[in-house]
Image 1 (tube, rainbow, N blue to C red):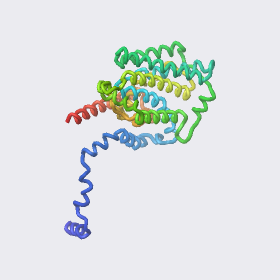
Image 2: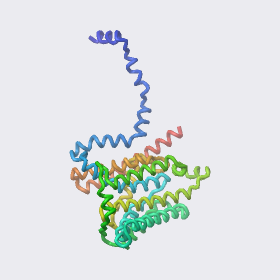
Image 3: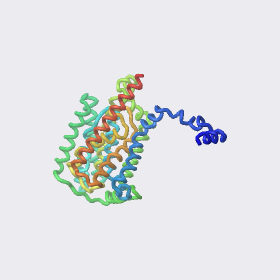
Image 4: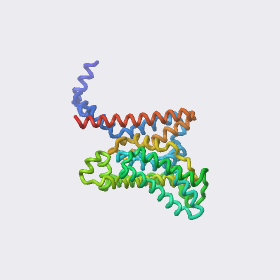
Length: 342
């Protein structure tokens, strides 16, 4: 029987070697390179396969819409965090600035209108970012310490305005929050547009390329003529500005300013950016993949809520996700350094 099959193949003019020839070029290294460059997309695909098995509500239009809306605030904060990580820094003040700006908008909108109140909030957020940048570039304070201090300052300023939630009602905010098209809402569209604009800035401008260069090797960039301190200062100011935009989105979504909102979100943004494939030590990363990381992280929380998992167990899972993401990032960095050395 086997002989007959072999003769049949031979008569058809098709050899086993010819059939397998295309597979010979598919080396393990190439497969690993494919996975290495697209791991976040593969994780997203696996998640989209597994999640519906855990809850049949996950892929419903309403849930995806709510998931994207929830991701918008963390996503905007993650844009700030991504840029700072890209220059080998950390920003622990992003959530504090969000809380401060939300309170400023809610407090001043009845007096001066939402547009002017938003300008106040964006100015305050940029001011905290300026403080971070000066502390890091001029004071040579480690980013972790500088931004931790700014977290305390921004939270303190928020509580000086109010110690409780402030409700705000404005037609413009309600129109933005109420706009919807399929699974897209106003906050989601703002998040996506901002992420795409920052992506284009990083890819198409000299300053964007210099930001990557600073994260890759600050000393080399300085020797190449890059004004390192000026660019780092600009990144921190923009990070503060974007965090204040996150506060605006929070007000749009919740119709309130809350001084204690976002506790722990600074770690969430770091985890989401690292899940998105960014290098924890700077110089490497794609902001669009980082935004996919935000969606993945939020999806994990969403699945646990749909499964009605105990909140304490949810905290354990989130901590585990952060640990795995950071550990994987460090392992990747070590592997790349070894590969470059070889």
